[in-house]
Figure 1 (cartoon, rainbow, N blue to C red):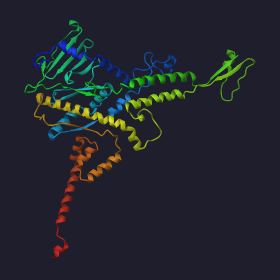
Figure 2 (figure 1 turned 90 degrees about the vertical axis):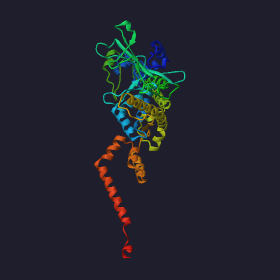
Figure 3 (figure 1 turned 90 degrees about the horizontal axis):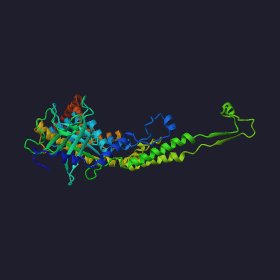
Amino acid sequence: MPENAATTVALSYLQDLAARNSNRRNSYTTYRQYYDGSIGHDLMERAKKFMNLPKDVEFNLNICDIPVDVIAERLKITGVTCDSDEQQVKLWNWWTANRMDGVQKNVYRDAFRDGDGYVLVSPPDESGIPQFTHEQAHDGDFGVEMVYGDDHKPLMAWRYWRVSTVGDAGYVRRKNYYLPDKIQKYISDERQNRGAWTEYKDENDSRWPIPWVDSKGQPLGIPVIHFANKCNVDYGVSELRKAIAVQNLLNKSVADLIMSADVDAYAILILLGFSKSDIEDLKIGPGAIIGNSNTDAKATRLEAADLTKMMALVDFFIVKMAQITRTPISYFQSSRQISSAESQKQDESPLISKVEDRQVPFGNAWEDVLRMGRKLYNTFGDGGMDEEIGIEAQWADAQKRNEKEQADIAKIHKDLGVPEKYVWAKLDYTPEQIDKMMESDEYQARQQSRQAMAQLGMMTANAPSEEEDAT
């Protein structure tokens, strides 16, 4: 690949790289359909009618969203730390300004559902803050994808989307190629040149391709950060990869149960030798007596079927879903029994292990996002940030907290002399919340009271005793 930033990388070469692994993109679509519950099992028309299902909608008892959402809900960045207090405050301001408290959940959901999620880092806008944008993995229609070389290092990333502005919607497509030292933009308009891809410059672009280098001419790097779940060489693995087969079996078993219940769940009265008028005149109810003048008439009963085995099969597949996704069964089934705290911890241990395992690579990815933001701030913004200073993402505890236990632990730390700001951080207060608490009038008054008490104690300790006064 050419190293000179002024040299255009051939579009045909980029397209060849981007066209790889179409099977993976098709899988993204499948995973999203199962997560959304849009794939199910067909039912008889009668069952569809009383369930009020549209004719083109399949029945499903979708639980594929649970293994994805449960783990995504447990992951939360609560702060960043570095050796420079000034940088630490600035980096966290970027995080909050980009509303990453909510955006991060979308990134985790994509990574667990599809196997891959992405964040695009853009230069500072008019506010002077680098922009962090959540991007879905490319499914063949839209999205972002990282392209890796034979050495499993990123070669480039590309973003594909359809323009939705009035007049161009349905005709115009865009794609950008992000290389370490340049950005190449292309456009396709089906109304021109048969939709052929041509070079494109946005309003503020002065050159094509856009040089992507710092003040020293060094490549800034690819501004797309890859969040890969259970990374398998280059790309991630979906939490639903093994779950889909179980979901299909669950849908079929529930559909079979519904149709069997419709036919066999109630006893059926069989009348032989009764005329139509006799049957219409029958009054069936508790204590009713059925009679007929026809001596050959018979009444018999077809007993209701036992559906417990079919119901057990449904439960079996639900339990299997919990087992293969390492998700506590309590998220799939409700029970009137309240588990002990120790039992709950044991049930959640596989989930906690999975969450803590993901915190390592995802924490590294968020640190890469902030480092790239710092680079772009130095190149396109106000600058002045030392890029050698390390950045570390801070996670909320993966374990669901017992508030009383945490309060007791915090008190122990406080009694040992641990500064209050670290005790508060242990209780998952954000850096912003801690700063506000420390700046509050109540806190300042309490600090002044403590200082006064400490001074009084020193004065008392240094005062002469009665015996010393007597001498």
